[in-house]
Amino acid sequence: MNVLKTTWLAATLLLFTSLAQAADLTIEITRGSDRATPIAIVPFADGDDLPQDIAQIVSDDLERSGYFEPLERRAMFDRPASREEVRFGEWGALDVRYLVVGRVSREDDGYRIGYELMDVSGERRMLGETVTTGRSELRDAAHYISDQIFEAITDIRGAFSTRIAYVTSSGIGPDTQYALHVADADGRNSQQILSSDEPIMSPAWSPDGGKLAYVSFETERPAIYIQDLASGRRVRATSFEGLNSAPTWSPDGRRLAMALSKDGQPEIYVMDIGARDVRRVTNNSSIDTEPAWSPDGRSLLFTSDRSGGPQIYRLDLDSGEEERLTFTGNYNARARFAPDGEAIFLIHRGNNGFQVARQDLESGRLVALTEAGHAESPSVAPNGTMVIFATRQAGNGVLGGISADGRASFRLPAAQGDVREPAWSPFLN
Amino acid sequence: MQLKPYARTLAIALSLAFVAGCSSTGGGQDGDSTGGTGGTGGTDGGGVSTGTADGRGINGDRDGREGQRATTDDRIPQTRTIYFEYDSDAIRSEFEPVLTAHARFLRANPSASVVLQGHTDERGTREYNLALGERRADAVESYLNVQGVSPSQVEVVSYGEERPAARGQNEQAYAQNRRVVFAY
Image (cartoon, each protein chain N blue to C red):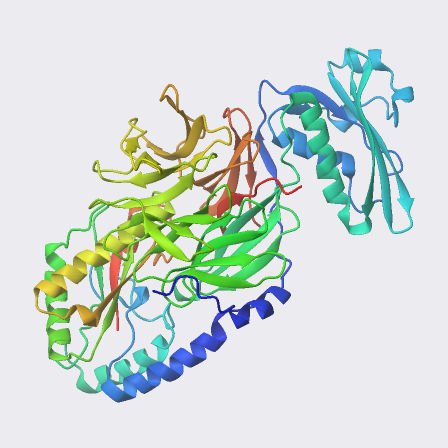
């Protein structure tokens, strides 16, 4: 038993201090939603010489969500900077429903950004705020503004100020290099937090956004580690004989669900992180893996091939009762709950490959969201509006995003190498 | 920044000691398959496991001197990769002689040990594939145990789809990746 070796691994601090600035991922919108709401985000006044184009970042955020269709800049006849300067009738004639204007001024050690959101047909200001920000935090400020606008219009909390973790690999065979990265939700500001010439898998965020659990083969055996993102310190949580895989945090942050094969074939276990013990919660002769917590923490989804092929099951942690959830097709795996607990997102094998699908739990109806291909590892935004996943583009591993209704999609390709296993952070503010 | 240099140095030191002590040799990576459907050749050096290159060098020298097939009980069989059908952990009949040769070597050399590295192709989800890779390696382990190999000589590590031997989204690449590697 070497659960949670408390010895902090000495190499880690060294590792973290080297925080390589990896090549960012770049967003490509591949399909806008046909139900997107027209909005215009006017370039912010006095923002021309800033290192970041705030209005463009906001525009990209809102477009990526699938909820909005930003007006192209060249169609803007006017560049108002405040409500007083807005000629509502003319914006209305462009079929713009909402309008965002703003201005930037320099402060001693940063910037002051004022912005306003207008309902064009009502000729009404819906939101107005002034944000002050440090010199290097302009992108953060822009994502914050996106969050406020998104919530003011949709009544859904924005998730643009969140982050994603993902795994990269480059090379083939013995020379393959693996790395774990954390970046902004739009793929920018990426930081490498671990690299190894052995595989790294299954990053999972703690509910407070402060830690990542993941699997690393750095000892040439799989083991689960927990790494604190601020300090870089980490601890090996499990290194049992056999598989140590698929860690996921309970909503209260006190437990990890995982798949271990120490007792034979892979089973689901729940580890109490504080008490350092693991409890086996499934028991049968087939593969059980890929656990995911329900938002209320009372049940787990998992993948099992007890029926012959992989299907999704739900385990009630109090009663121990298990229920098969998926019946469409012969391959359904790696499910994740929607934040409201009413649907699950999973990988479904259709006629031509693997795709991200959503299954409504009430009706049991499964709907494919992406084209058939090589989809893997769906991860749901904390507000439930988007799913990020891994797929392939021209043979390379890239990240893809799809709106929860399947209408809008984007890609996040890397400049080189393969990107995969995205994990969307919880809300961080 | 790398995790490995320290570990690699240590492991190489240990493995050299090990090699010197019991004449166990390295190799066993994807690239050195000499049989089966892959046939990727055995020229590329290095590998997943630390110390492999050193071990392989020694092995290569011995091969050169002796210049014969690995049929004697004191040498690790040369074919160290076997391949599987899609979504299957069944040992294909063409690879039974390979397993039999490894079983004989391990029985004859109780101090030798092997890591069975299970792999899958890239289709399907990663963590489920990790389980499928383990199932393949377990099937090999069971076969060896039935042939009288001590369980203490055999360890299973699954890599799932994380260490492909071949790149590409086609059946040829997939077939090379669905494998179990004997890593001594």
